[in-house]
Length: 321
Ligand SMILES: C[S@@+](CC[C@H](N)C(=O)[O-])C[C@H]1O[C@@H](n2cnc3c(N)ncnc32)[C@H](O)[C@@H]1O
Image (tube, rainbow, N blue to C red):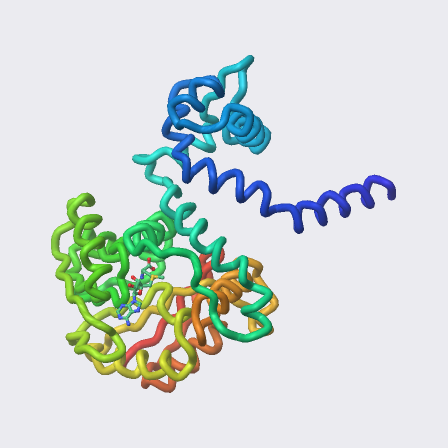
């Protein structure tokens, strides 16, 4: 009984105090501590390279060790396997850009009290578009294989990655021999071109524009909208899906990929928290349930609506007869 009480108190302290661990990690990432620690360094060595305060640096490094991101042996700190996997540039699972983007979100989320009072977004964090798009690449890389294998690609020759961002899904589709059009805003296309070039992917063409107003081309056998609908309100989403349906070839598929949200919207936690992110950042966006997305696809003209759950995300698929 005593033990259960202690566990509940510890879990509750973790719930309100989680910001401290996040802040330590985001600051270490901002200061490029993980790159600088390398094979091993002391606090004083690191403080002199980074030109930071020795007392503060040492305390930060000890907290990173307590979090399992650094290993401390006497006065030397080195990276743990966890840090090497997620925080060293060049690792396939690298999340450093996502953490830099999270740092921007941190500033916007700090205005949540006022966002809830007013219903107005608070985009005070200074945005770096390059970092945002690279963060989307960090986010998509661990998911891409599962998403692509959940799609029926038989007979798919032309695909559109609408709002394709960094091109993570375009690259995977192109590697399957599909001709892919990556449609996105021109400043996103600039970043995507570089990521696609680095990945060595062929068969990807780029089309810059605003998907609400500009021609998205077609006909396509497959249109993927991954992490697009959550930024907009239902009216805009219904219009965008109707336009997407027009761009489909007969027999073609629309695939919507979003964070998963139960019908009562009270979970799972990643989808519910992501909804808060969209209240902070947009005037109408939020996470949507598969049922809502399916009903918009049906209204756009799709039939054979299917839902596939993939970890914390969901694919909702609809076909054009
Ligand atoms: C959250 S990211 C998703 C990127 C990618 N689909 C993925 O899942 O990794 C949203 C993308 O939509 C693009 N976008 C937002 N509004 C747009 C618009 N009006 N027209 C075209 N692209 C837009 C952004 O530039 C960004 O690349």
